Length: 321
Image (cartoon, rainbow, N blue to C red):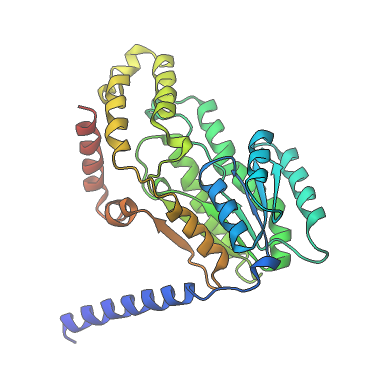
């Protein structure tokens, strides 16, 4: 058989599959006003915007914030369809209390249509050798272990509604580059989500992963990231720091300045992906969000690893000088 014909047939099958998948994902569920959704990390950023968007669409929303001040502010900015609560995803007792709070307010016999694990932090931003065990644990406690605990605790309510779990990952869950604790946590989110999806495959529960690129949120503000980096820099012995000339405070400040120019302010794109995961009858398993992910990083994680390493290291070195 002609090789060109085989290649053309393969490309045609892939394109048809992608088209059918896209069309299926646009078929929506109905009766939003009867569906209840829990969203974590609603203090600011994606979670805050998502709670407000779901409110406008008519969903019943349990918006979980870390602080009571953020919960009160969000409650004042939304309708009676939104119920705010305080939830610390690193505290098992707080998670159990949130489960009881939500269960007591669900109509009899109903479950949760969705659990959106949106809460997250960046954690230490510096070379891996500079990060203490506590630095890893702090990041993992929120981004991974908290996500796992919330999912496990609320899964029976999701199963009752034959709903879905939506987990926030990152491009850093596909390709690791800087901020080692954050990348480790996001790789863990990918693994946990894949395992869970296959385990509940016959239970009517769907598991969706959102994989954003770089967006301008509060947790990634340059001043916050630089402060975190400086703390790690100061805590690291000079004889170790000398091996990382691209990670001086001055060099890192330059990298952040250049990176901030290309970070996307279009937070609505991530909110759109969340909404699609909650409203589609056949939601995408994964959604890559952001032009940087689609056009650059997606290419990188398919290149030979040595080439990817060279590109990323070269980009870092040029940004630091």
